[in-house]
Length: 157
Figure 1: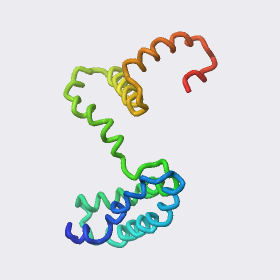
Figure 2: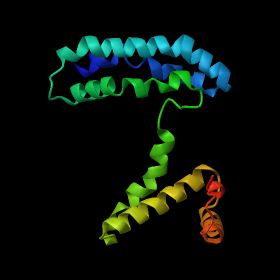
Figure 3: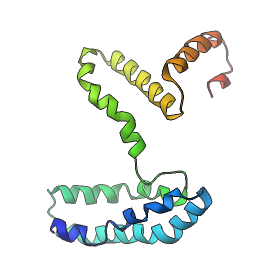
Figure 4: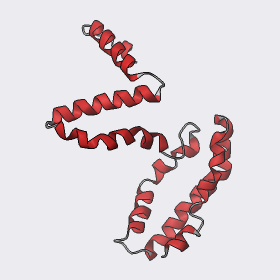
C-alpha cells in the first residue's frame, strides 16, 4: 500500500473537523457524536480491512496495529467533551525535558531519577495550572511540613 493511497483513503477525515473542538462542552459532545464518531468508525473499519495488505514488518503495519490495540482509548474523546483530540499539551510540556535530557547524565541512581521525575512533574503541573513553579514549590515546602503528623491528608487535595 503506497503513502498516497493511505493519504487519499479518507483515513485522515477526522483532522478536518478540528473546528468542532472550539465549541462549548455540550455542543462539542453533540457534534463529536454526530459528525466525528462516524469518521472514527470509518477509520477503524478502514484499518481492519486494509491491515492485511500491509507488510507486517512495516512502520504502517505497526501504526495500524497500534491503533487497533488502543481503539478503546482513542475513542474516549467522543464521549467526554473535555478530552482533547490530540496530545499537543503533553508534547509541549515534555519538550523542555527532552531538550534538557543531556543534563540528566548527572543523575546516577534510580532514586535520583525518580526524585527528578517527581520535581519535573510537579513543575509542569504547576505551569499547566497557570501557577509560578517557584512560588508553588515554596508553598508546598512551607505547608507540607506543618502537616507531617496529620492523619487527615485532605490538605493534599
